[in-house]
Length: 345
Image (cartoon, rainbow, N blue to C red; front, side):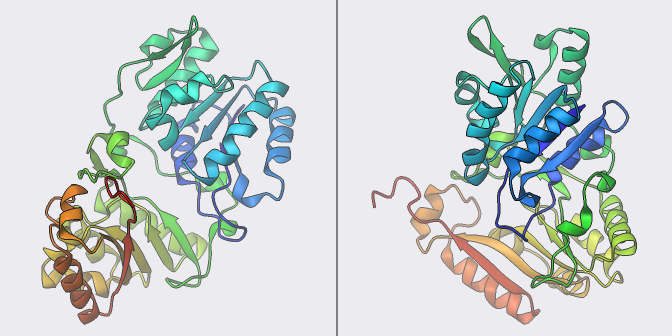
């Protein structure tokens, strides 16, 4: 039994769907018995996880770890687990072990770090652990050997169409459906992996080396229709690192879902949205788009250049985009970075 654990990342009642662990579960469905434990749903996550490991006679534990709240919980929890189950393989994946692999493996409790896209790496690692296979053959894996950290070759990115759709039956889905500004029954969704841009502050750059893997519009629309019909979902939060990379793909998705009666929110770049045709804006609005999250980043054109924002070379572009969104009744949600290096203050 593999236990997949999602460390706590948010306040009670706001738990996002653990999409990364569900993506792993999708490829494990036919190969390995597993369960997902989400710290966001538990009043005492550490106790619940330890009890699950013991009761389910776990053969391995996988944890997804981002910097911030998840890391703060994951580090002491990993030590606690290793002290109680010293022979249990502990596997970390996600942003932090991808970017800081040596730090993760030098600390002791973590046995294996999965770098970048983790689905196939995890499947091959579990097979090697079960059969005594050659760990050095598992691309995208790092581990300790004879007191040294070993980094296997990177794994090429795998198109999302190679993977099954998410196993919604493996999580208590109703606990992840929330009322918010998008809808009364809103759920999270990822329709792509990665991002083709290289902002100097963004973790996704090292995660995918500017690779971008989109789901086809037909598959996205099919999944959204299933979520609407089976679970009564009426709002979607697209948590893609950049949903709007391809205007053609966005337009096709919108055309397919325009009669679904779904509202939606997504993230995108100022410069790419500024290039969108009016016909696409009208179609996005008709399909239910209510709000777009963009990184305005700064009020300084020079700082935008230092941030490697590419085509987004002026702050005026962000102001103009807000005006355009207002014309279509779409709310611009802008974020800003304070203290981006090399700002001394």
